[in-house]
Image 1 (cartoon, helix red, strand yellow):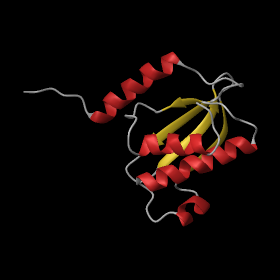
Image 2 (cartoon, helix red, strand yellow):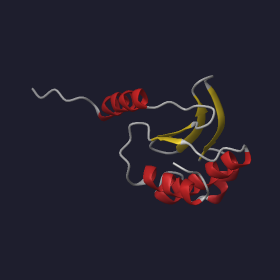
Image 3 (cartoon, rainbow, N blue to C red):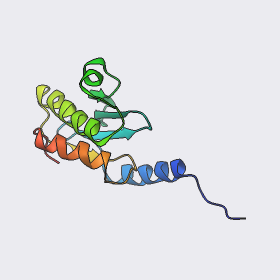
Image 4 (spheres, one colour):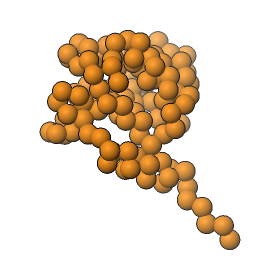
Length: 122
């Protein structure tokens, strides 16, 4: 019998390994991304005190009203611009990108590229 770990467990282990490499500080907080089957979530976190500085998701009414679907690349790109605007309003310009153990392609890459274009540096 082939014993193979489920993809979710593999992703969580990757995320733990990534989180050992970097932390979000007050000067350079962490942009954490989570992608579910139906929605995407992005948070900017200061890990030294454990505070979420700002957050955005495709569940929010103003974001959801702009989107046709909440689980595609276009939705991810729009979410990237929303989180970048919220961060810039709070005076955050540079972040550390935490892809959450997800492969850097598709939705995760679209969110990151859109956040860069909107003014975040990472």
